[in-house]
Length: 329
Image (cartoon, rainbow, N blue to C red):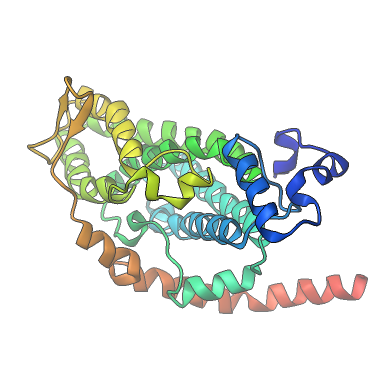
């Protein structure tokens, strides 16, 4: 696995030590220097001083991302043994492996902010922290796997590409690796979709039915609109774009590609307003989103329980390894 530190040059410890917010100054003065550094496009390393507000914001953001990668493999895992060909099984297995690797990288990033990995797992399995809405839904057919890999991952990568310039440098470096691999996942998904859309009438109907079911969660995925000036994650440059900017970007790229395949979208209001340069659409069901991400979705409890059981069944492996590592030290 690539070490994220190798993906981007960083200042030496001596150079970082000369940044004013790393000096032994009164808190308010440090805060002002830190804020000016971040707003000017500067990067923050895990060893830098940072305000509690910034540390908490980055930790919350990265932890949810890590949770989503870990839980996101479960809808696809259910189809590993039911993939239609060996080639498809190998591709899906590789994708699942990548996603678990992404979770591993992101939990590493989050740990450096002060929260142990076991505590993050505890909170996830207890329902105290969230994961993305799309991973609370069932996968009913092989067509769902194509839609997830092509469109769900596409909606995710729109957001992830904007995170490559996050002010928190370890996260930005990690996102470069993740985006490389997600782009391969999208190509895998598109290949599944194109194969089905050019296949039998039954395959095409299966794909259209899957698209109809996933469109609502897809439109909810980036979250409700929020004023840029009130978003602290934007202020601290933890992320770069608002929810609506991400949704508009996704629609601009993928609506034409969906229609090009002869598929239809289940929203009679969806259209491009050329005068305003944006897409109009039926307002997503935000109450459904709030219900789902608080672990009341169709598959929420089943998938969390799978993770709980799996964690207990593999506990002896972790304890054995850690015991051996402690003895060697």
